[in-house]
Length: 371
Image (cartoon, rainbow, N blue to C red; front, side, top):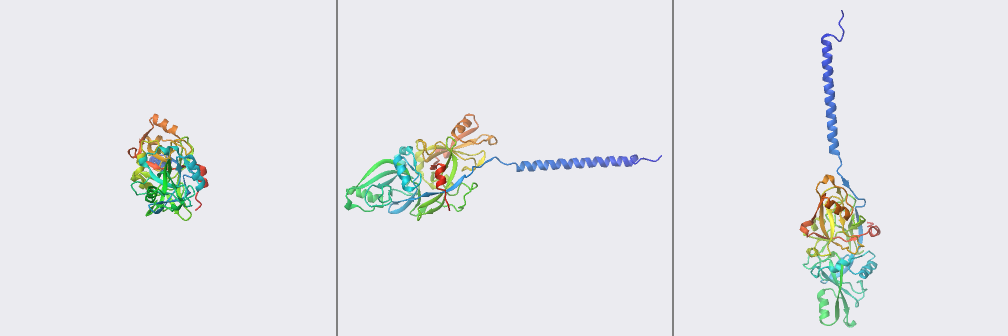
């Protein structure tokens, strides 16, 4: 009888060969699947929340004064008196916020400004000579928060331009002028002064991916009387969009990291109503906030009665970052804290205060830098 092809040793050989092929193919498929899964895991996107127009360059008008005989350039962003805020807005063509809380600034945390109500005509707030300030950044008595004193000449024959506090005090002593302490406090962060200026950013191309630091100023133009600064996007207490600039801070370490003026006097605001809560995120969803996570939430909008440009920073930290969600308002923050999802810790031992004037979107759009 003729043997079938599938009989004997040939049949066994085919079975063995087929089995080996099945194992090889299965192993190959399993390896391919594992490699694919590994690549997928590696490529799995990290949760990211990027706000559109997260950073915008804006042009802010400069104002000029004298400090110890030298010129000093500053910006006017906030005032404790509504009429003064409106007057400054009209004079500068830039919205100056009304911040009643600034009137509660401790005397020890203030520098002094002297504004002339008569005398030499000029570009001062009342149409006369430019104001005289008592200190510049780096001086022991410097603060961006200024107590406004009005200076009035008694006799026109004595009128002359004064450029230092000492000259004003001498004028009061000899009876040439009077000084009136108004109780009005303004926020006038110094931008450029004798021997110094705010740090200027090397990378002038501001995008949604731009880093928060290492500086907040893009350009200082004392001819056009403009400073170009980076405005950062965040949330107000009700979830509305706000923008803010960073002018100065305490302690020195975070001030240096942000590239702003270090002002030890800012610490004197801790524990006062002038330092309002601002919550930044220490972990969670990656984003455009100063620490690389979601944007911060302030406890006041610039039109609120409890608004102040001086902010006491606290850190929100998710206990389980994998469960982080986007928080947009104060109610969200309170709810997450009560549920135990986040902890809130005062930054730098409760001594981290930042001068961040807030602006609404219309102000940002109107003054967006064209250069």
